[in-house]
Amino acid sequence: MQVSVETTSPIERRITIQVPAADIDEAVSARLKDTAKNVRLNGFRQGRVPMDVVRQRYGASVRNEVVGEVMRERYVRAITDEGLNPAGFPKIEPKINEAGKDFEFVAVMEVYPQVELSSIEGTEVERPVVSVTDADVDEMIETLRKQNAEWKEDDKAAEDGDQVTIDFQGFLGDEPFEGGSAEGHALVIGSNSFIPGFEEQLIGAKAGEEKTLTVTFPEDYQAEHLAGKEATFKVKVHKVSTQALPEVDQNFFERFGIEDGDEAKFRAEIKKNMTREASQAVDNRVKQQVLDALKKANEITVPSALVQQETDGMKRQAAQQFGLGEDFDVSQLPNELFEEQARGRVQVGLLLAEVIKSHELDADDAAIKAKVEELAEQYQDPSEVVDYYMGNDELKTQVKSAILEEKAVDKLLEQATVKDVEMTYQQALAAAQQQAEQGEGEESEA
Image 1 (cartoon, rainbow, N blue to C red):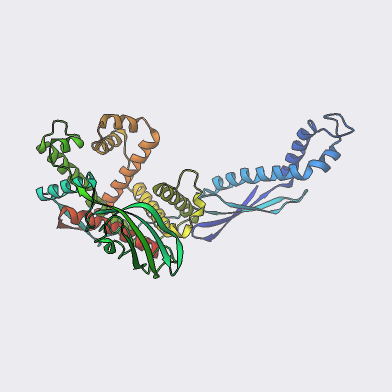
Image 2: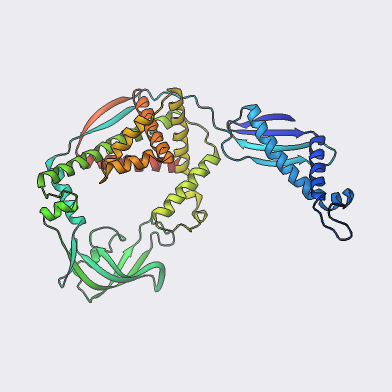
């Protein structure tokens, strides 16, 4: 077997492989002899069909089978011998495929890029310093009250914060548009879940009233045929409901696992959860800044096969998030919605892998268990969660990957200049969210 490798781009290789004619012809002859043993043709007993008849009848299909097997086997042997690290499947095409001539085929493949890491030294990373105050706890308790509120029907006119149950149908001119209608929809006025201007026009409405609302869709509205268009909605109000907040009492505390109804324990548990959430927000904000700096300092060519794999994974996540069902064909979702973000994720993954490799980072079972125990604190039975994770190799691998990523970020952080910034609990959460959205936006513009 003769192999030649041509570098056609930093991550693409064109491999030409020649296989001696004798290897192919001998394999075809052997396969035809095996075939002849089981052939049934009129006028011949089984196993007695002449080879020239077998070759005439089955020669082409048998050769195609042999050639396919040879290409797969010799491709694997070639990339192993040449020390190539493929990123995805190759495109394989036969070039010379004639009996009596050396067989030749070409495999075009992508390989993982060679990464020589550049330092992020000089990068300034802003690290929030957060303390959860009693006022923050009070605000969280009010949020929990609203989340556990009941809606009670009232005969009054709707106000901001009330819930209205409505039927509606939207029109462009005189024509109704698809997706612009619903019946029995519960809408909280002020939730900003509808088009700007829609909810405000329902203030003052009473049960039984019918209203016509005029709104203008935003210029960047996701449905292009509606973006920037003026529309009217015919709305019927069935009922108006006001929010009845639960009392902050023993029954309320018991809803959140404080069985003895002790208020001090309840507030302590709330503060503990908020502190953990704030810590995660700080870590995420710092991590995002470090990863952004890493990407800017290390522009690499990303294999399209890896981008497609990540894109497909994001499609499946989106389908699951929007409840499209297990049978939904994710190929219906356009690649363009996910591709650039997927490219950014792959780039970060390749760079972090190099950081982990260059610093010889690792995580043993003890470290994995410690991380799982930390994650399990928020569950009702932490020991059960720990046992479940530690008994599942796939989950352990996921946790190990997360630990290694954290270690890699810590190593990179040593190269940066860290600036501590005092923030409130709410500011820290908002900053982390904004940083994440900004990172995704930059990937989309890349």
